[in-house]
Amino acid sequence: MSQVNNFSNNRLVNWFKLSSPSTFYPLAGKLIPFFWALTALFGVAGLWVSFFVAPVDAVQGQGYRIIFIHVPTSWMSMFIYIVMAFWAALGLIFNTRLSAMMAQALAPIGAWMAFLSLWTGAFWGKPMWGAWWVWDARLTSELILLFLYLGFIALQASIDNARRADKAGAILALVGVVNVPVIYFSVKWWNTLHQGASISLTKAPAMAQTMLLGMLLMALCFWMYTIAVALMRVRTIILEREAHTDWVRQLDEVKN
Amino acid sequence: MWNSASEFFAMGGYALYVWCSFGLGALILILEPLTVRIRNKTIILRLKQELLAEQFDKESRQ
Image (cartoon, rainbow over all chains, first blue to last red; front, top):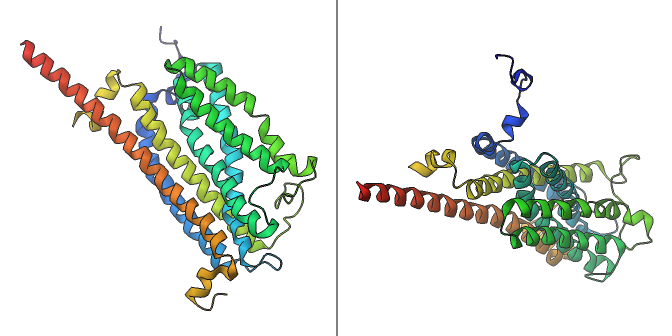
């Protein structure tokens, strides 16, 4: 009977074992300080480039420096949504508990990123366009993204049964994915006040190298921040949901 | 690029817009992990109390 389950035992990393909360919990705990260190590193470098290296803009003066927080938060708001929908879909397909918890842990971070994107956009739009807000395709679709995040959080919170909440949330998250390409291409599809993409995959970036560097460093900072906070929150959610299990009771932080 | 600290903080006349953007961004990035930390401490405290309650329950039955 030794041949039983050879399939999953012979691999270098057993992904299905890793998807169990009891294995993932200590691993995530070890990774958190590492991601905080990277957040700080990229944050300091990014802010330094944003304020002391990137030259002043010929048209917008110093006011353009909002780009260094506006663009990374906007990218992250869309990226986090896709990652969240991915975890939600995995949870729906394989019925793994941890995937749904990951989606739940990411939602508030994505909501804050979408909010910051709109907030910094308003503070950029006021001096440059003369308006805090316009019902433009880019701005409106980003606002819908914020509402999708809030809807996901509210829906999950309103259902008492955790597994049913996961399923309902996953379906909402998956339906909402259609909004992400709408945001991204909104500046092409419609005639909008919002400027086109500063960086595209197909052509050379239309900006100074140092500006690009600042934006990329800030984006990396937000990315590492997202991972760090998501791991912190998923650990908390694991404890809340697995409170009745033996392995949680055996944890050092609970026993002592 | 900047000749003095006051010139830096003035941001060429865009101080309100630049510092409100970066200020709230920094505030949210600091407050969010702190709220997660509080939530984490709360659940660990609850788990400890449950474990303690069970121990008392066992001891009182003996």
